[in-house]
Length: 187
Image (cartoon, rainbow, N blue to C red; front, side, top):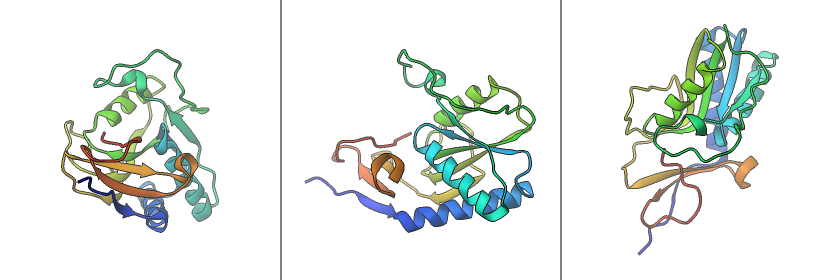
């Protein structure tokens, strides 16, 4: 019998997590001077825009936001032919870059993102913000800012839905063998 998805975060909880991450970023960096956000396609980019909007609400300053396509840098999936969809309309050299993603799992996406960033310049530092940290790391990668720590089994998948992409905001866990069709973030 198929197991239903289990909702972990609703829209309000995601909003609170974004606010908490934003305040932590400001506290850690003593404001937003020299700061930029780079979101990993697709849902990481939406999260980066939300964090930037919250930072602007709090500090009254615009923080530049870029979008990073890590597909050509993955080591665990073959990269299909196609163009790089990254959009980083500012230099990252000398800036504090906050890399943003929806789910942190093995760490391979973040390793690929760091490789992609380093080809674009030499930042003063790279920090990591994730909405969900589900554990099971294969690489020594640790987030600086976490919306929700979510212990999971390898038989589960975490799916982040965002209004901009999916029409609603929520985070659910599904069992991989019996979960509904659709994009489940397991990495």
